Image (cartoon, rainbow, N blue to C red; front, side, top):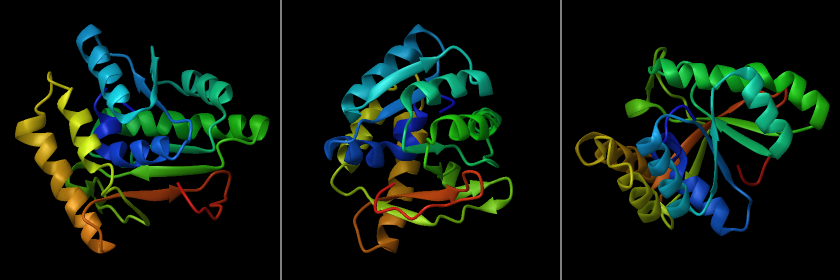
Length: 194
């Protein structure tokens, strides 16, 4: 992720849900400054996930991380996200993937997360997969609140709740998070979980 609060904002409920089910979950984010990096650590702790801070969000740095972790699933920002840092982070992962997947066989699945108010540079997102985060929504929101340097109460928190309610309603749940599969070397494998 591009920023210390992005994992919580766009996928926090899903990350916490998978961690609670016993999956080894790691959030990777570009390091910023001591305050924001401490917030990232606190947010990861609330979600119950590990944190890796990258000194740069480059294809080489991402490739090294993916080769080390060998994740089954990777969540990236929408490739046409309205925020330039998000686009750059998503593209860094996409650029790193061919070599890493051929060398390690991982990741097996790649998903793009939601964007600001469900909009990208190309218009509304077209989510394919909605995860019921009703059981972990409060944890997601608690993790967001540790990012005190950001406008969580005024801006990001209300947006996160609105989107979670909307996506939850689409599947008959209280809260949901959405993801769009991205092909990995031309494949989108079937999955029972993200």
